[in-house]
Length: 317
View 1 (tube, rainbow, N blue to C red):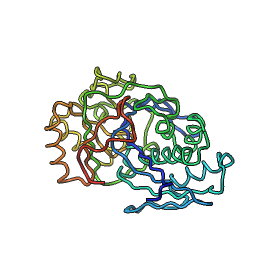
View 2 (view 1 turned 90 degrees about the horizontal axis):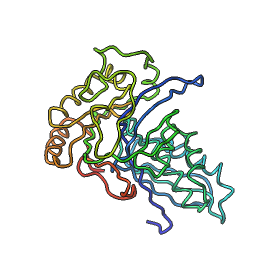
View 3 (view 1 turned 45 degrees about the vertical axis):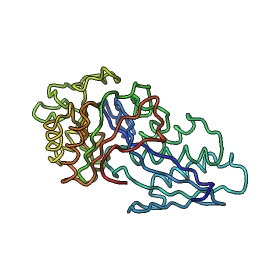
View 4 (view 1 turned 90 degrees about the vertical axis):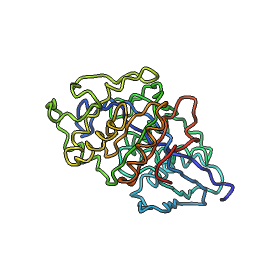
């Protein structure tokens, strides 16, 4: 590897709470959500070039042009901060190694874009503030500011860009189950009716099917109340993919204290107490026999760097 190569890791996230609170006139939906970063990472390598942008996605069928969010993030950074770059090297070569499943509700694309913005800021020593990078990130996606921020967990409102720090999820391992197909976030929101949901269609909560349309995110940390977990988007995705409900039921049957879909899906996660790691591993082994992307990971905690650690067990990178 070239000594000038910079390496950045892009973590996945889960939504522990997600309420859709309205829709703006520009078509964006407003949210109230609680997001937690995880020790599941994509790897991004950055190297300076004389000019231009080159993107490589080894072992992936992702586009390597301007339709890729990483490429778009690099182009946006050069457009906004290129004037601050000194020297003759004003372009960048990027190599993205994917581990986080694509279009899975885990924020992989947004995290990769954030890693690009932060990585280029470090690579070229342009001195952009986190606020400047977050402003750039919002042009790429509503979740990007969360990944730009050095927060393990946060409550996000607005379209996802208004962040309030939250204590990290404590005391749990997270078992991620991706069924192997992708879901369009745009499709999910287009099919979301902002009306009170009927009891028979309430697939939101992990164990409490009486969760109403109102509610506030549960407090994170040691006293996290899993019964308050809810996701307004789950009923939309699960109405087309009934398999998600089966995965949830299996996780709960195997001992998960709670199970829910993350984001717009289709990844489902189960929370296992840390002291029941053996049970979580047995569940993982069973699920790997049926599904292509299954990971046992940890929440990123305030004293834990997002540049270290990794998957406890699961599908190899």
